[in-house]
Length: 400
Image (cartoon, rainbow, N blue to C red; front, side, top):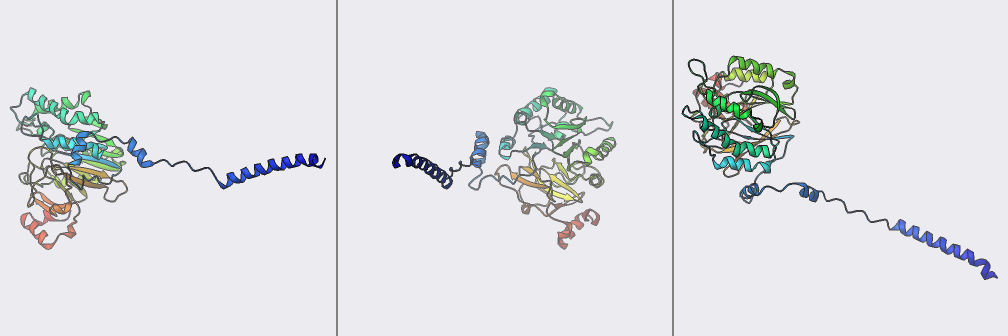
């Protein structure tokens, strides 16, 4: 009888004890954590591999590899002067090399400061001019469209020269008409967000990520008075002034930098007056080509990016003892940086970065001193100031 009386209680105790044991075991041995996601693997799997042509060029850069600078808020790849000999429908290999490398740098936009084709010769027929633009499309524009890369550009003298004759008419009207026809074809849309097409492709504005771009017809040395009025009115507009940065694209520079281009006619007329006007409206950077020589400079408050070339005929800098380069520049824009822009410029043949210290500290071209980007006027030695003043005069060598 005692055994029967206590048996249910024993069973209940055993069950309770078993439950308690299971609970304690669970508390002492929590479930193993899930394996955390491996971010690098996820990034690698989502990142597209470089095209074989791009990878082969990158691998040719040598054991130190091809430099890829720290990325800014916006990245531009800037190219210039792509053309070869008059009438050519082919391009130097450096042009194709530069375009092929774009997937490595992954720019937000490509910018060109002119001379995309090889015109400016009266004997070129309409068929020849159209063939040049078709070749440009094959080598440059079509690859950019396929990559969905916006392309901002300015017209150069070999694209559609703005030179005028004694009667005030354009000497190369046919080339200008055909350039305009090419760029206004819907199939050739450069993929930019226009603000004002005004006289596209000669004068127009566009924007990208709060950067205001203006392109003007710097294919000759003179910007007509009525066009300068449009420039000033446009730069004064709320859309221009409310942007975080303003950039102007021109073919001819304001000031001379290269041998063989150090003369009136190869720079924009009235450079100081125009620079002061651009400064009033806080234009940060003036990008130009034509001189075929890379030089990052400033005068006054205006940054001046003189582009090297990818096409034929690099030129040495004034007074420089270094050989000329074929070059392109990666511009990284950081809105919270005091400098705003960082340049990384490559000798396209060797893929080595061209450092500021390799370039002259200043250039004394015929229409005024230019200081290298990282040099201030107070940094010039007495000897350097004397050199400039003996070549030019105190006004042209003075701090602007």
